Image (cartoon, rainbow, N blue to C red; front, side, top):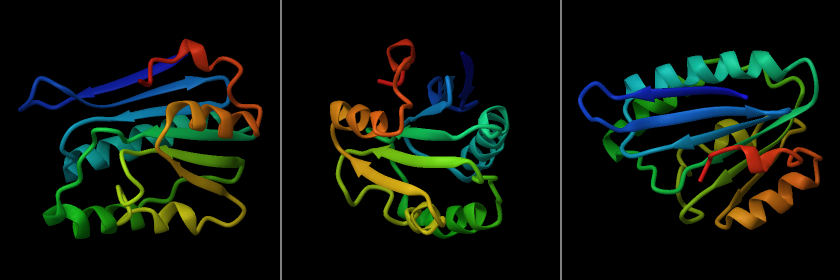
Length: 146
């Protein structure tokens, strides 16, 4: 299992963690987001995708407790729009959220990917059930995404 964790130099807390379990990328986002965190996260996500992209894969992004400041939305949207991630073998993407409005500003960048099945879910057990439809949860118990 690959693990990438980034720490904020100003805060002694993790901004995100990326695990790879089989063909499933598991991401945990934490705290207040920033443009610098987003740039580093997308670079690390691109590396992680490169490790699984030779076969069908999926991603689970746990956004519970994650916050996006409204003052940063436009900059982050531009950053995401300018970053091309190779999603050619991606089957699905599941966002575990506090509520269904969370991250709605960046949702179009994922929901519009042709052929990608995307879902926002508020329950960890529902996320696991949905991902099991794609045979991506066999080793999920190994991951620390909660």
